[in-house]
Length: 617
Image 1 (cartoon, one colour):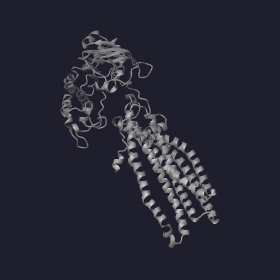
Image 2 (cartoon, helix red, strand yellow):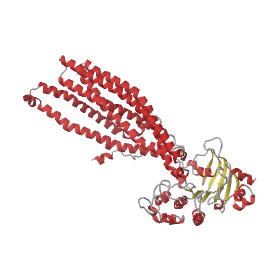
Image 3 (cartoon, helix red, strand yellow):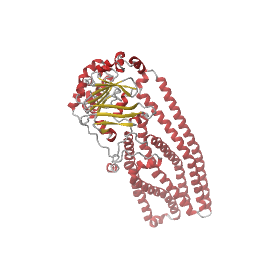
Image 4 (tube, rainbow, N blue to C red):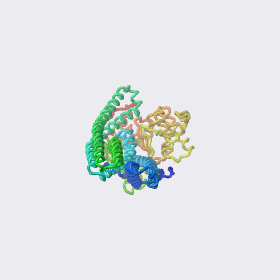
């Protein structure tokens, strides 16, 4: 039965993935609670029923005390047996059913599914952001905010609809009982409720502000720790462990200060609440004694009233902590909302079509791009690549070569001009269909923390085992792959590579990346320093494979090591965002310009742009 109830809310139900969540706290929370609003209403109804029943038990104490004091023992069962049996039946049957229903709805139907639903939806929306979004923040911080949003929103909803409603029912029951006996007896309770409300009014905004500061300090600390772990090799190589420890300690100190600031507020509020609670008990007990002495109150009424007061006292501190928890979660939601509720930087146009690649002609027409700054990186770039043509982009660092490939992949939107593939403007097609038709090998090869097999098949998940093995062979990766093993004793293609492929050398990662592109077999190929991490022996070994890979494809290759691209059909030389020379290797050498200077001066290392230009002149 419980498993059936757990499936009532589908966390993965379809929804408009590209719709930006609201950027106002209340609407942001409701945006993610709306799919489960029916079950929230059911939880509210059950919480009210449980609160009424539980507060009614305290009123039954008064009735029972009065019954015992006014009815002789020998007549008790004869006169009140039926009523006592009915009360017992309610306590034995109705109460367990209501409490069980409350727990099942809260835990099975809402808690876990709602948390998963919120995490799934925030993750999918975040996944739709452009690359620049992820480059501008810590991956750990983004992941932390996605992960913490679900529990925070869930706890806010359940607390408001469950805990606070439950307490409110108790307060109303106490006021009703006291008011039915004497308005004087209701006065302490009424004054306490007003004072408690004022205390919450003062406490909650301050708690919200300090909770937000606390959450932000925690997020900074987590981001700092994750940054250290992610770049642990750099930390070790530069012997900067002391600096990283100091940075984390500083972040921890700021988090501790923010946390103590919040705790200081809680301690002061708790002290004031203790005074209010003590005054309520003394006032209620004193008035009960006075009214009883004048015959205006029965012992049962006094017992029930004091029991309710004691219960409300016990709950008051709990409610204060609960309300604080609510606003801590509100602070978490606000912090997460600042990360999540941002418009997507790159979006497909309405009714964007899928890219249909034929021969594979690529054309840049008057392309302008400046990364949002005043100085353009590319300004009026014109470049036509014929179907099946293999061109190399050459030039000093900062010339705009990688920007050209990034724009072709539409990792950024251009600010002027257009880019066409087989006559189709890439801004009018879907991003996924565009990138599905382009194979990419970059200098900074990053692998997923999965098996070698999954990494090679990432661009073509349906590939057969034989095709994966053949791609590894063509990339000259089969030799080292056969020797791999991981901490779970998985071997070969099943071995996992660690975060970002950290368990492999740079050359091994590069060969896996090349195998991945070989298997993808896209009609357009982009290679940005594809062999930069390979030694000369391995590069020579896979050169034939790269030739096979490029056959029949339109190729755009970047390399600082000019020997790797000298044999391509055409070399395009760039400088400061402009094309300054074009031609074959021999033609450019004969021209004696920038490319010739690069060729003469290059010795396998990097040459600065001013030095190259001086040599060319």
